[in-house]
Image (cartoon, rainbow, N blue to C red; front, side, top):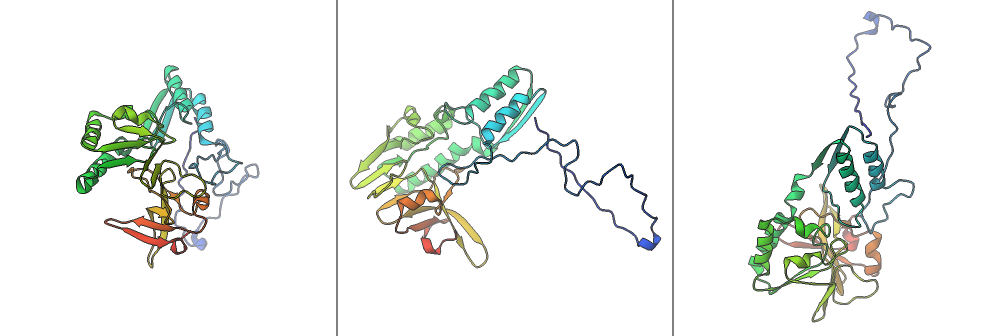
Length: 295
């Protein structure tokens, strides 16, 4: 396990040079260490990365974090300390072999401490509470969830009884449709409602991933759009709807889901003639032409 050490340097106030003793001579056998340089016995530091999908942020010269985690976990002999926003061992996920390696370390006698973001435990209840409030306000006959309903296919099994009860109440007396996402596929069907890759209602087409090329009436998710605007005093980044009058990509509804900037390349082929972004405010949405947004 790589140990990261922090060096705190405090500079004491110096008196007048005329009153100070001359500096002690430096031994010629000890070379000075430049400020900020690692100590001679410090382990090497490697920069690795994990990047959101559908972005061009990856650097080919950097190794993937999940691969390096496997190496670090495998080298642990006595203790292993980890801090993550959340962890998943869903089949096929990048974290599946990492979680398996941690379990193997525990079985081998390594003492493991796992720090997880507390808000992640509450992510589903908070999201469900917001969805319930909207359903009570607008009384829709149909609710369509546009995929990535859970972080992985094991998400439904992690719901507690309270969350399951909230979902049953949402489904009662209305049509409830889960669109399959690339993270969770059709796993949400065990919770009730309908599950389908896409749904057509009149001229509208509900699907998780937007298709390439023209798609009149398409309402899609997957990309979780977000946009930035500059005011006189600060820059504001907000989730947003993004569309061109023929199709629309919706923002993420989940409380702790991230956002992809609308100027990322994933959006360009969807809106070759420009787009309008509708940023989410506290009580309304604010429209901005793409030319008015900050890149």
